[in-house]
Each structure stands twice: as C-alpha cells, then as structure tokens.
Amino acid sequence: MQQNSKQENAHVIQGISISGNQKYIQSFSEILQNPLPKHPPFFMDVTLRDGNQALRKPWDLDQKETIFKQLLKLGVQGIEVGFASSNSQEFKACSHLSSIAPDNVVISSLSRAVEKEIETSWKAIRHASKPRIHIVYPISAFTIQNVLKLSPEKVLEKISESVSFAKSLVGSKGEVQFSGEHFGDSLENLDFAVEAFRTALNYGADIINLPNTVERYRPWLFVSMVKTVCNMLPENAKISVHTHNDLGMATATTVESYFSGAVQLETALNGLGERAGNTNTYEVAIALHNCGVDVPLNLSTIYETSRLVSYLSEIPIYEKAPLIGEDVISHRSGIHQDGVAKTRHLSKGAYRAFDATLIGRSEGDRIEFTSQSGRSAIFCILKDAGEDITLEQAGRLQPILKKISEDSGKGELTLSEIQLVWNKMKAIPHKATSG
Image 1 (cartoon, rainbow, N blue to C red):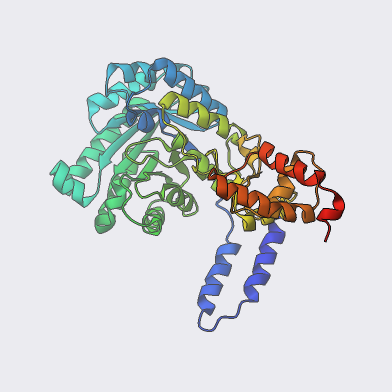
Image 2 (cartoon, rainbow, N blue to C red):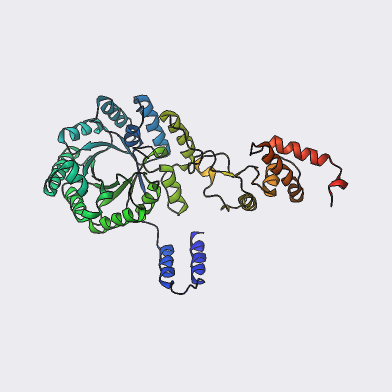
C-alpha cells in the first residue's frame, strides 16, 4: 500500500514541468523516496516533571500516581517522574513511582549539575529497574555570559564533573542523560555546544538531549542544528529533543527532528509545561503515524488520557485543540460537507486528518447545519437519523433551514429542529412540491 503510494507520487512529480524549477522538483522527489528512520521513536514523557511544575496547583502523590499509571497504559517507554532534589514532596513522589515502575520503563529524575542534587536524584530512583539521572546545564553563549557568568572552560569542567559523578552512581544499572539547556539559542556558538556534548559523552553520558528551551525561531533552524549535532557526534550517540511551544511550532520541530536523527522525543500529555507548554504527545504520535512510522504507543488511549489530564490539571481542553478538541471533527461549510459526504466510506477522507477511532473517539466526522451549510449536510444528517430523503429533497429544504438559521440568530440547528421542518415539507402534497 505504502509502495503504491510512493509510485503514484513519483508519477505525479514526473508530470510536473515548471521552467526553472527542475532542481526543486528533483529535491521533492528525493524527499518522497527517502526511507523512514531505522530507529523507532522513543517517547520520554515529561508530564510529571515539566508539566507538573508549571501547574498553578502541582499534583499531590495520589494524583501523580494516577497520571503515572495512565502513562503506562498509553505505553510510553520512559517517564521523568520529577525533580527529586527540589523539595521533600518531589523526592517522595519520585521514590514511590520508581518503586512501582515496571521493568521495561525508564524512570528519570531531573537534576542540576550539582553533586548533592545528583545524589538525591539517585536515592529517589535507584529502586527502578531502569533508572536514569538527567543532568541539565546551560550551553548557549547568551546564558553562559549573562546567567552563569563563567568561562567556556569552566562550563566544560562543570559538565565533566557532574556527568562523571552521576555515572559513578548509576554504574552499569542505569543511564545518564545530559541536556544542554538553551541549545536552541546556541546557533552562534554551535561548535562549543558540540564540544559540550562530546565532553558529556566522554565522561559517561548515555543520552544527549537537545532542548529548544525557549522557542524563538522557525522549526527549520532548530532541526538544522539537530542534524548538525547528529553528524558531528559519534554515530552510536543517542540524540533526544525537548521542545517548548512558545510560538506554537513544537510539534513540527519534534517531528522533523525525528526525521533528522533524534531517537528520543520528550513530550507531555495535553502539551502541559512551562509558559505555552511542551510538545504535545498526541500530536507527535499521530503525525508520525500518518507518515508511516510504527509508533510504539497505545494510540486508542489518547482521548481518554486527554480527559483525565484535563480534569486533574484543571486546565480545559480548547475546543479547537488538534485531535482532542470537542469541535475538531465537526464540518459546517457546505463545500467541506460535500467532500465529507462523498468520502465518508473511504479510509482517507477529503477533510479528515485522522481516524477518530484511532485515538479512542467514538464519533467520526460530524456534520452540523448552519447558514453556511449546503444540501449535503441536510442529506447526511437526516439519513443518519433514519429518514428517507433524497438529495433533491435536501436541496429544496436547504434554503428554508438556512433562513431559519439566519433569522433566529442561533446559528447551528439541532436535529429535532431540522426534522420539524422536514416533516412539515413531507406533509405538503407531492404535487405541490414537484416542479
């Protein structure tokens, strides 16, 4: 199926003849022919740490355990359970969750590059079968100069000392992840950033994380930086990305980073996180799925997970939120509704970005009637309700319903309101309604 699709795309490209744009056509063809990454995506969830720390009312232990168990149901491969050294409640939560974690899930705690904090993290998560100490330290020129106020040499020294200390604690049982905070701001000193990552690897880091700590620029720029780092580090280096959504592009950045060499994707349920949030787990998962990637998550639990997280975080889900918003399966424009009606039975819908049942939504394409709707809407709405109606009859009914929608000022009409007008039309003798 996928091979046939590629062949069809290739034929389309071959048929394009635009003077002066041959090189772009060739480039597009190469993109379509590129194989999917050999490595499956590794979802490292940060909801319990980055998501929780941004809440107006951080979760208590019971709430954290509820989210933790839902993450296991979703099937994420790794969970950052908290920032163990930040306070006693966090330490207790990290310790408890690591003690009930299944053998196949990586359990991580964040720490600054401070030995005492690193040791606290280790004490909290050491009971997990797959413990990981996550060390974060700034590497951008701006932060080094204005926040740390250290020389680059001192930064490298701090990285080597903290990573080697963490490695001495975890030994062969666990892993060490190093995050170069503000990597997204490191364009002007990218060579130094690479040197910092090499230092971390040389002193025992198992995973190198590239955070877009503050999203300031277009995804292409960050993805290009990711690709550069992947090319400059050893081939076996495990690269992770952690992107924030300040400009609303975190999903695109994370997805394209995966196709550019990142193996681990740090995401959060419902996109929770500091400021505008972190990369949304659901969006990344379905985008990759739509691209043909074998996503190692239980996608059918996405919708229920989103509702649970919204309830516990007390953050409502925007009705237009991709995938999980209440209104994203609704169609009201007449042109769109006609396309929906004609492709409802197909696996790919004219205006359907994803199959709602894939994420556990019981309802698929929803057609609503407003003053913007056409006869296809009426036909589908009444047919779905068991009414015997033809497209011709729906066409005669449409202007009547449209006027009611406009004159009433209420906009969307309910099924009962549509049926009321339909029943009145049926009651009129056929001779009077025929042309």
